[in-house]
Image 1 (spheres, rainbow, N blue to C red):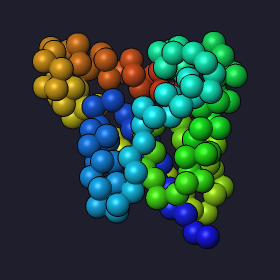
Image 2: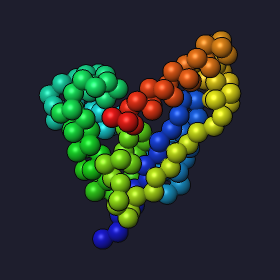
Image 3: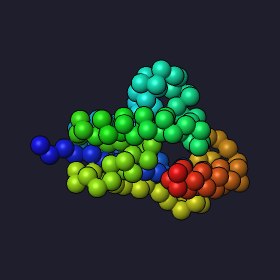
Length: 141
């Protein structure tokens, strides 16, 4: 049986969540983002906050394995757009997965972030740079 999975990676300020919701809606697919962390927290018997914090640190490989397990289970259900959580990594090699990166120039992302969060453009530019570095470390892990 053919299943379809779209994994959307994004950079801060790229507005990928909005794009992913539109794609999911037009295709009639489920949109999944926070549900990954919530389900992993249920399996671990901890708070979603604990999973989210561990996801962005080197703290717990068992939590990382749970996140990957939940991503795989979600993909098996098919017809889903999964946003973030490095979903395309544990699903690499599957023929039913489309991997998408939504980004824009750092300047555009900083402008969007400043407007969205009502912040100074220089602070937004620093936030974009910090996020890009954190994303790079996350993907290296």
